[in-house]
Amino acid sequence: MSDAPRDAPRDAPGEDVPRCSAKGCRAAATVDLRWRNPKLHDASRVKHWLACDEHADRLADFLAVRGFLLARAPM
Image 1 (cartoon, rainbow, N blue to C red):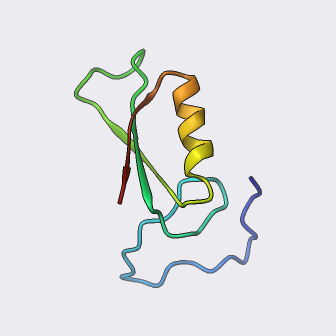
Image 2 (image 1 turned 120 degrees about the horizontal axis):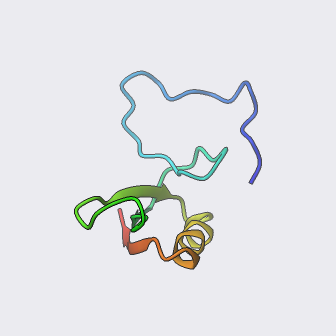
């Protein structure tokens, strides 16, 4: 994944569009990856990574290999 250019456009004030969590990606998110690190968080703590279609599999695999992925759901 590449870094976003320094002059990448920012969201307009008041824009409420969920964005992909992949580094440098500004695409609209289509998938919610729910996860937790069991060594750090108890069962009540659930974190979320949002992903676009292009990055959803890669981010889910990253979490699954570490045993962190709890669920993958469309947004």
